[in-house]
Amino acid sequence: MQFGNGSVRKILLAAVVATGLGIAVTACDAPVEDGRASFERGDYASAARLYKLAADQGNANAQYNLGLMYTNGQGVTQDYREAARLYKLAADQGIADAQYNLGVLYENGQGVTQDYREAARLYKLAADQGDASAQSNLGLLYDNGQGVPQDYREAVRLYKLAADQGFADAQYNLGHRYYNGQGVTQDYREAARLYKLAADQGIAGAQYNVGVMYVEGQGVMQDLVLAHMWFDLAGSGLSGEDRENSLRNRDIIAAKMAFTQIERARDMARLCQTSNFKQCGV
Image 1 (spheres, rainbow, N blue to C red):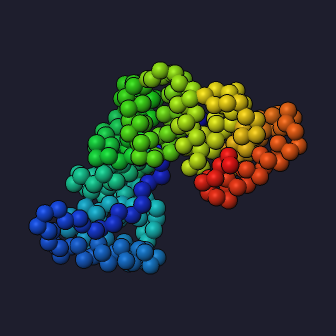
Image 2 (tube, one colour):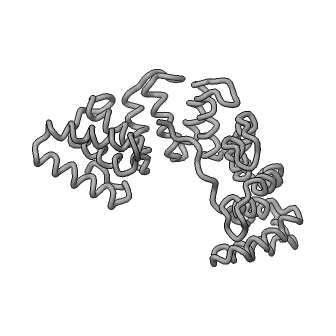
Image 3 (cartoon, rainbow, N blue to C red):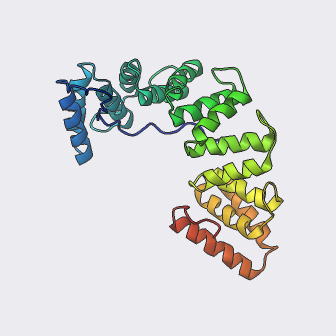
């Protein structure tokens, strides 16, 4: 199982960072700030109205924010086509989040005709600005050969850029490439390290894979207690057949464990969950 398409991004704040002598506040900045304040109060209808005032004057942040509200149906009727139109206006002005979100719409065929090549182009624009979500999604397109030639080395390069920023999906997918030796030299230890980074951020598929590696002793010392813990955690986050497999694996190894070991694994799983995955395996 691979994780790729993230959800659309948070509201982009309208704050401007001055670099040099300072930046003048234009007339269309005020509606953006007022719109943000309305949004934070939960007054989405007013926020949408104010963002539209600024968006109609060409304010890229307002165009992006209003696009996000059309994506989510906040203060307006959900409309992916209008969201795509607004994202494009902001993307053409270089807003990385808008480039990313528009890429997601093209990848999924929401509000636009599905077009992996256009999704890849937009992700690259955002990725070149250091956007981790775009780097990860573009890596997945290279992984699967969608919109670009399949290229595991390029996928690895992009995953690494995002993984180094702490992006869990990229850590998980990069772990796959190290586990399978695709685009890199096979390295179970590095695969386990990357899976663990993603698992510690709550990625259930990564938790499952860490459990497998502890059972098999691949890249880590074999440890059934830790394997039981990770399968238990993964079972809470997965669904359907994946969940059944995780819990089945947990029960299979439980048959080889002492009662005290099982209790220890359960205690560790509870601590991991209650600490929001900050204290796993301790």
